Image (cartoon, rainbow, N blue to C red; front, side, top):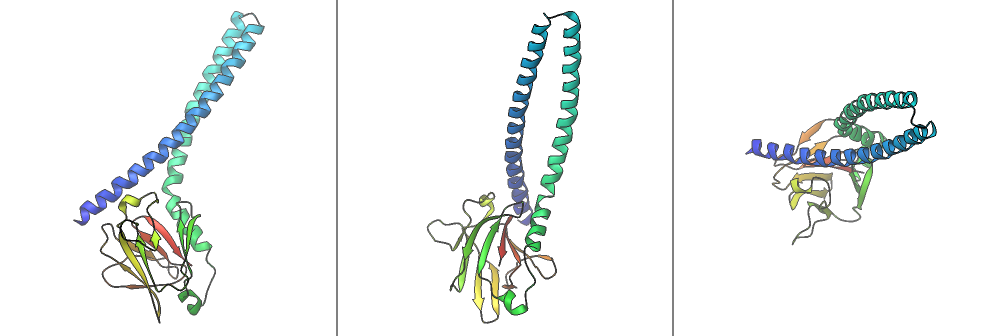
Length: 220
């Protein structure tokens, strides 16, 4: 069963990566079209100015061939670079999240006031204020309302309707998985250790990162 969950998770991630890559390729193609239109107009103007002489046409042909070779090498280099940057994006996101948290005392870190949804670059997408609530359900709103709604996130298909819950106690906040399909993870701020939430509640503090499937939520 766990094997099929991991397989589905990888498949959804690949779909998202393909969508992002397609967007990038579309932008690159549009920019290339504009560039080659400008080159074509410029070369035609020069050839027309010199009455399409054999020498100038030869020079223009060599120039265009050189541009094609440079463009080919540049495109391959750009693609490799973008893939490497994408693979490192999750690590960059986590490091930026950790750097954004100031050192706090134990008492301060037990006082969680906000949940912050992060994107793959580590930037804030949405913030939920906890206020006086003692319990928050994380999931997707359907017939049952949830406190932290992740319906519109990139990997929402991996998130259960009632995925996890945060409970306030006299000893701080505790996170518990509600039998979700793809599990709940936690990266602790104190030691940067990532763990999977089992059946028992786990204490969380300000600076920790909750992973709802692959979606990152910072506790602050």
